[in-house]
Length: 129
Image (cartoon, rainbow, N blue to C red; front, side, top):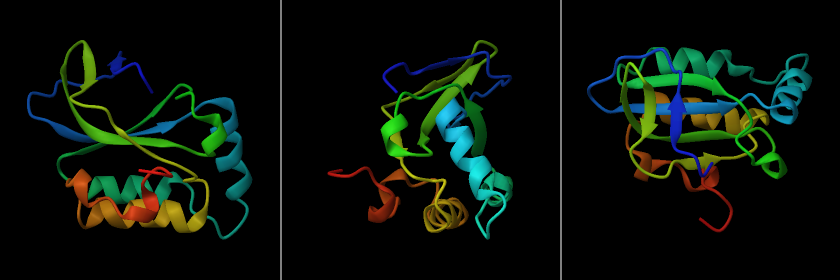
């Protein structure tokens, strides 16, 4: 997640938006596919939550390079224009979102405390963070 450039994002954003960028790399995508047959939460619940938050954007990226952390989403503030979105600061990595409780907690945070990244629940913060 060192590269903060999300060029190619179809957007024209003057004001900052809360960006939830879910990893669409091979491993993360496979973990999400495995959960769909269970009582697991697919990204639909997260999409619905983002739809209720006027300053939030959800997108899927290529591999974020955090394969050891399971399904990953990068969460933080972004701005942009015709060239795409760009992180304003280092995003927080929310790990293991392929797990039902973590995906649901992220969706609940988006509906509630978001866009206050500092209010991201401790259980969603990176280990040691």
